[in-house]
Image 1: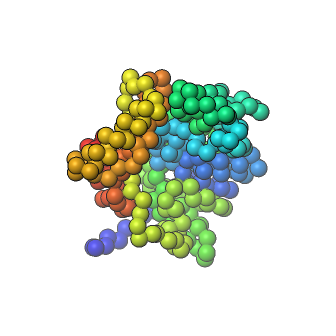
Image 2 (image 1 turned 120 degrees about the horizontal axis):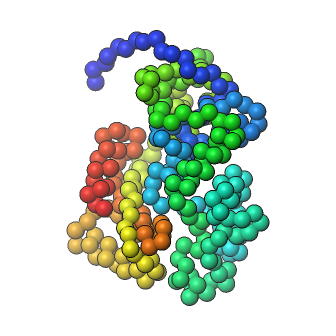
Image 3 (image 1 turned 30 degrees about the vertical axis):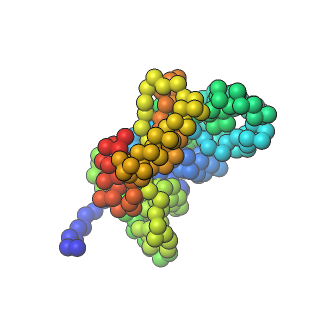
Length: 276
């Protein structure tokens, strides 16, 4: 690969105690916790909102939030606080979802999403804005972390790009919440990548569907038959779930590739839409 040398003086836009790169669920938690403990915090994200997977991907659900044996939440802290803000759960109570701890099949069939708290991505964006702002975090959206400058064994400066062009941020501490360990990798930290990678997924949404367990079983049978006949390629599940009212989303599409490779990632987006 040919190489181009590029040198430029960059504006120093911030010197926070803590810089959180990425505002997915982990990034929100890290930023809020640091700010509530007295640190000056900046959180940057390439999107125009926080939430990461939760707000970027159709299908906003907290898997593993409730233990099926009791119907009680087993997750607390900031996650519970966020769901309280949106009225999905109440303090000291199970989620506002119909769930029969005795496992009655009629109840299960009527409420197939009984143990997974769900909320609308737009509501979660607003709740994320509120909790970050109220905690004193300075959010900077539409800002892509692009590189780092390492001095000694620590990250001295993070380079980001936004509508101001390339900018520099000099934090005392950097928290990598990018999801792919981008900052850590650019800083030279060791990492492992498996030879066999999990395929990439694209969720899609369908309106005016009444979701039942029987529909799920039929979908699985149709996909299995189509796969056996060579009509479709790789798929998973399917895992359909209620999104809002009679709108459902499908977690079913699978595209092989490496999500840290820009070409593979682009192909997965294009192929995923074709498959949908």
